[in-house]
Length: 185
Image (cartoon, rainbow, N blue to C red; front, side, top):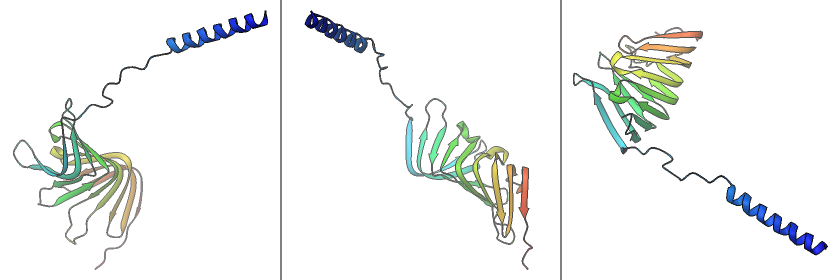
């Protein structure tokens, strides 16, 4: 009698195991895990023009991909150059960047460094932040992140910033701390 019960239990266990295996959730068919770009550029220089045919910004980077649906660009290790009205250039670098369709907005993402054009003394203003948005048509930069601004021996820190790239004026928005060094003769 015991061997019959043992065989019956073994059969029930085998049928139960088979049923569990058959009824398990099936994986979904693998589609594209990521939308593919409609083109990729490697080791390139790109000059974008505004509607008047004037330079809006220049960028060079080891890689650019364009999203086919949104017509946006994603760049790796970019170096941007934005002209100002006096012929100077704002230079900006970051780990990655995103550029909106028609270049109306540039988002610099992670380890952002932006250098303003040299002043009369040759010194450049340096901005460091986690991220920064640049609006080339409006000559405006902004961020809500922590920012460190250095020029010569002076250092300003704050949270949030706006910069007018034509007038070279910047505004820290909150929690401002500064150390000013006297100008050297």
